[in-house]
Each structure stands twice: as structure tokens, then as C-alpha cells.
Image 1: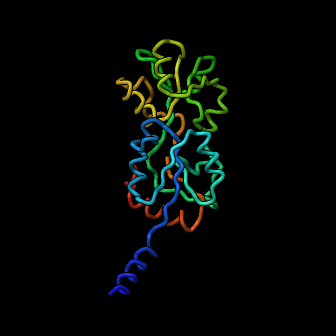
Image 2: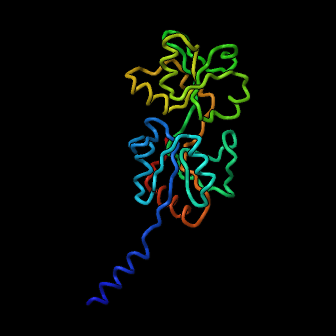
Image 3: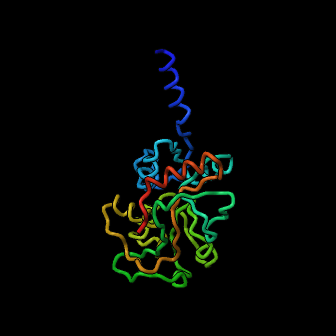
Length: 218
């Protein structure tokens, strides 16, 4: 009897899925330290995911050091990063990230970077807005929290700010404000938000399991 019990326990533990660290860039309402962000909830559906939410700079440092881990939100789009499918594997999209220009309520919405030349434009420290915006010649005034840009725009201290959605929508909701003017059908840049992993046997299995919990993005 004891021998049979021992064999059952040994059999079950040998097939236990190995946990994988998912380093998360701290984005309020999207990837939160408290684990209640939009993407946190989606990733945690896979029970072996070990979420580690860190400030952006430190998150990248930790991702570079690890040998078999993942990071979110990232992607293999060359407009934003140099991660290639040869060495990295990414999950199905958690969502679609789009960068917009937001202007003060009561003013016209803007969709062209050229209209920002010579203006005071806010952005968030540590965010990668892509090569197109980086090479546009627009000078960006950086803040640590995008909610500060919303308040600065309200006060007339900046002329506009650029930001991702869903991040910006989450911030407006927290401030109990309607989203400021922006041209919804003309984002400046767009990319998928995925869980990106360094290729290994463990991470490939992990992504396979995680993908089963991620609904297709419309």
C-alpha cells in the first residue's frame, strides 16, 4: 500500500510544469505591482507564471541578465526593438498598443507629428515610442507618471502630450476624466503587446500554455 502511494506522488510531481519568471514593466493599470493590472490578470491565468513588476529601466536590466525568462509588454517589431524570432519567442498579443497625440479639451485633435514642431510636448519617462517618433525632431518633456502630463495640459503648461493606449485611457479613468481630443483612427505608431521570452525549452512550453488563456485580439 505504501509503495503504491509513493509511486503515485512520484508520477504526479515529475509532470509538474516548471514556473517561468515574467518581468513586467510597471505601467499603472496595465502591469501593476499589486498584480491587478489589465495584463497582470491575463498573464496570471497561467498558474506557473512568476510575475515580477519593476520600473522600466530595471526591468530591462533584469531581462538582459536572465537566461530563461520573459518580459512584458514587449514585441519583435523592429520599429521598437531589436529582438528577433531567432532568439526570442512571443505569446499571442495581450492587446494592441497605439500611440496618439492628446490635446487640451476644446482644441482640435492632432494626428501629424509635424504639427508638434516648436511646441511643448509631454511624454512619459522610460517609454519606447518607436523610431518614427524618435527621429521626428519633436522635443519631448518627460515626466515619471503620465497623469502628470494630463494635469500639465489642463494647466496650459504643455501644448500636447503623446501616449499609448490603453495606458492613457486607464489614467483618464483614474482621474475621472473623459479622454482628451485625439484622432482615434490615426495613431502615430502601433504594435502588439506580447509576453516576449528568451528561447529555451521551458519558455517555449510556457508560451504554449499561456497562449491557451489569451483571447484573440479583435
